[in-house]
Image (cartoon, rainbow, N blue to C red; front, side):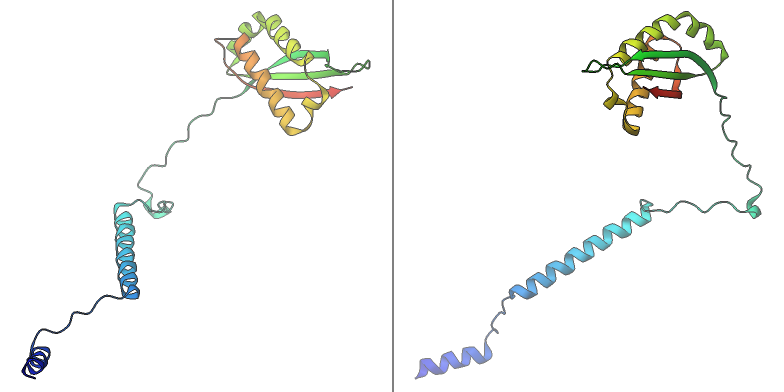
Length: 175
Protein backbone atom coordinates (compact mmCIF):
# COMPACT_ATOMS: atom_id res chain seq x y z
CA UNK A 1 0.00 0.00 0.00
CA UNK A 2 2.83 2.29 0.64
CA UNK A 3 3.99 1.82 -2.90
CA UNK A 4 0.61 2.90 -4.22
CA UNK A 5 0.69 6.02 -2.09
CA UNK A 6 4.13 6.87 -3.45
CA UNK A 7 2.85 6.51 -7.01
CA UNK A 8 -0.06 8.85 -6.24
CA UNK A 9 2.26 11.41 -4.68
CA UNK A 10 4.58 11.34 -7.71
CA UNK A 11 1.62 11.89 -10.05
CA UNK A 12 0.34 14.84 -8.07
CA UNK A 13 3.56 16.64 -7.25
CA UNK A 14 5.81 15.41 -10.11
CA UNK A 15 6.29 16.64 -13.65
CA UNK A 16 3.17 16.95 -15.81
CA UNK A 17 2.71 14.60 -18.75
CA UNK A 18 3.95 15.97 -22.12
CA UNK A 19 1.24 16.39 -24.76
CA UNK A 20 1.96 15.03 -28.21
CA UNK A 21 1.25 17.17 -31.31
CA UNK A 22 -1.64 15.76 -33.25
CA UNK A 23 -1.52 15.41 -37.06
CA UNK A 24 -3.95 18.30 -37.57
CA UNK A 25 -1.89 20.71 -35.49
CA UNK A 26 1.29 19.71 -37.30
CA UNK A 27 -0.33 20.42 -40.70
CA UNK A 28 -1.65 23.80 -39.49
CA UNK A 29 1.79 24.84 -38.23
CA UNK A 30 3.43 23.73 -41.49
CA UNK A 31 0.85 25.67 -43.54
CA UNK A 32 1.41 28.82 -41.48
CA UNK A 33 5.16 28.46 -41.93
CA UNK A 34 4.78 28.08 -45.72
CA UNK A 35 2.48 31.13 -45.93
CA UNK A 36 4.93 33.25 -43.96
CA UNK A 37 7.83 32.19 -46.22
CA UNK A 38 5.87 32.80 -49.44
CA UNK A 39 4.61 36.15 -48.18
CA UNK A 40 8.14 37.18 -47.27
CA UNK A 41 9.40 36.17 -50.70
CA UNK A 42 6.70 38.14 -52.51
CA UNK A 43 7.32 41.14 -50.29
CA UNK A 44 11.04 41.00 -51.00
CA UNK A 45 10.34 40.74 -54.74
CA UNK A 46 8.17 43.86 -54.63
CA UNK A 47 10.80 45.73 -52.67
CA UNK A 48 13.48 44.75 -55.18
CA UNK A 49 11.25 45.91 -58.04
CA UNK A 50 10.77 42.56 -59.75
CA UNK A 51 7.02 43.08 -60.05
CA UNK A 52 7.06 46.78 -60.81
CA UNK A 53 4.53 48.28 -63.18
CA UNK A 54 5.68 50.54 -66.02
CA UNK A 55 6.04 54.19 -65.07
CA UNK A 56 3.09 56.43 -65.93
CA UNK A 57 3.43 58.52 -69.09
CA UNK A 58 4.90 61.97 -68.48
CA UNK A 59 2.44 64.80 -68.17
CA UNK A 60 2.73 68.31 -69.54
CA UNK A 61 3.76 69.55 -66.09
CA UNK A 62 7.03 67.67 -66.45
CA UNK A 63 7.85 69.66 -69.59
CA UNK A 64 11.43 70.32 -68.49
CA UNK A 65 12.60 66.92 -69.72
CA UNK A 66 13.22 66.74 -73.49
CA UNK A 67 11.04 64.34 -75.45
CA UNK A 68 12.87 61.30 -76.86
CA UNK A 69 13.65 61.58 -80.56
CA UNK A 70 12.10 58.83 -82.68
CA UNK A 71 14.57 57.05 -84.96
CA UNK A 72 14.33 58.05 -88.59
CA UNK A 73 12.86 55.24 -90.62
CA UNK A 74 14.47 54.52 -93.93
CA UNK A 75 12.26 54.93 -96.93
CA UNK A 76 11.45 51.78 -98.81
CA UNK A 77 12.76 51.38 -102.34
CA UNK A 78 11.18 48.83 -104.65
CA UNK A 79 12.61 47.04 -107.67
CA UNK A 80 10.11 45.62 -110.14
CA UNK A 81 11.02 42.12 -111.32
CA UNK A 82 9.68 41.30 -114.81
CA UNK A 83 6.73 38.91 -114.88
CA UNK A 84 7.44 35.22 -114.41
CA UNK A 85 5.32 32.56 -116.12
CA UNK A 86 6.06 28.93 -115.24
CA UNK A 87 4.19 25.67 -115.51
CA UNK A 88 3.63 23.98 -112.16
CA UNK A 89 4.39 20.37 -111.32
CA UNK A 90 1.25 18.33 -112.05
CA UNK A 91 0.75 14.60 -112.13
CA UNK A 92 -1.77 14.62 -114.97
CA UNK A 93 -1.59 15.60 -118.63
CA UNK A 94 -3.23 18.96 -118.02
CA UNK A 95 -0.72 21.81 -117.59
CA UNK A 96 -1.17 24.38 -114.87
CA UNK A 97 0.55 27.73 -115.21
CA UNK A 98 1.58 30.30 -112.62
CA UNK A 99 1.93 33.95 -113.58
CA UNK A 100 3.52 36.04 -110.88
CA UNK A 101 4.50 39.71 -110.57
CA UNK A 102 7.04 40.44 -107.86
CA UNK A 103 8.60 43.57 -106.38
CA UNK A 104 11.76 43.40 -104.27
CA UNK A 105 12.14 45.79 -101.34
CA UNK A 106 15.71 47.06 -101.28
CA UNK A 107 17.57 49.22 -98.79
CA UNK A 108 18.12 51.99 -101.31
CA UNK A 109 18.46 52.97 -104.99
CA UNK A 110 22.20 52.25 -104.88
CA UNK A 111 21.38 48.50 -104.81
CA UNK A 112 19.64 48.52 -108.22
CA UNK A 113 22.87 48.09 -110.18
CA UNK A 114 23.81 44.93 -108.27
CA UNK A 115 20.27 43.50 -108.69
CA UNK A 116 20.42 44.17 -112.47
CA UNK A 117 23.80 42.40 -112.62
CA UNK A 118 22.46 39.22 -110.99
CA UNK A 119 18.92 39.33 -112.43
CA UNK A 120 19.51 36.26 -114.65
CA UNK A 121 20.63 34.29 -111.59
CA UNK A 122 17.57 35.48 -109.63
CA UNK A 123 15.28 34.41 -112.50
CA UNK A 124 16.94 31.02 -112.66
CA UNK A 125 16.61 30.45 -108.89
CA UNK A 126 12.96 31.51 -108.95
CA UNK A 127 12.04 29.34 -111.95
CA UNK A 128 13.76 26.23 -110.62
CA UNK A 129 11.84 26.56 -107.38
CA UNK A 130 8.49 27.55 -108.89
CA UNK A 131 8.47 24.70 -111.44
CA UNK A 132 8.58 22.15 -108.60
CA UNK A 133 5.57 23.62 -106.81
CA UNK A 134 2.14 22.02 -106.99
CA UNK A 135 -1.14 23.91 -106.84
CA UNK A 136 -1.70 22.60 -103.30
CA UNK A 137 1.57 24.23 -102.19
CA UNK A 138 0.15 27.67 -103.04
CA UNK A 139 -3.17 27.29 -101.20
CA UNK A 140 -3.95 29.50 -98.25
CA UNK A 141 -1.97 32.12 -96.41
CA UNK A 142 0.50 29.51 -95.12
CA UNK A 143 1.36 28.56 -98.72
CA UNK A 144 1.86 32.20 -99.64
CA UNK A 145 4.05 32.74 -96.59
CA UNK A 146 6.25 29.73 -97.41
CA UNK A 147 6.55 30.93 -101.02
CA UNK A 148 7.55 34.44 -99.90
CA UNK A 149 10.14 33.14 -97.44
CA UNK A 150 11.70 30.76 -99.96
CA UNK A 151 11.89 33.43 -102.69
CA UNK A 152 13.39 35.89 -100.23
CA UNK A 153 16.01 33.35 -99.20
CA UNK A 154 16.90 32.60 -102.83
CA UNK A 155 17.14 36.25 -103.90
CA UNK A 156 19.34 37.12 -100.91
CA UNK A 157 21.71 34.27 -101.81
CA UNK A 158 21.88 35.41 -105.44
CA UNK A 159 22.27 39.14 -104.69
CA UNK A 160 24.78 38.84 -101.84
CA UNK A 161 26.18 41.21 -100.41
CA UNK A 162 23.08 43.29 -101.17
CA UNK A 163 20.32 42.72 -98.60
CA UNK A 164 16.81 42.38 -100.00
CA UNK A 165 14.35 43.21 -97.23
CA UNK A 166 11.21 41.60 -98.61
CA UNK A 167 9.55 39.97 -101.59
CA UNK A 168 6.18 41.52 -102.38
CA UNK A 169 3.55 39.85 -104.56
CA UNK A 170 1.83 42.28 -106.88
CA UNK A 171 -0.12 39.65 -108.79
CA UNK A 172 -0.35 35.88 -108.74
CA UNK A 173 -2.48 33.93 -111.16
CA UNK A 174 -2.78 30.13 -111.24
CA UNK A 175 -4.44 28.84 -114.41
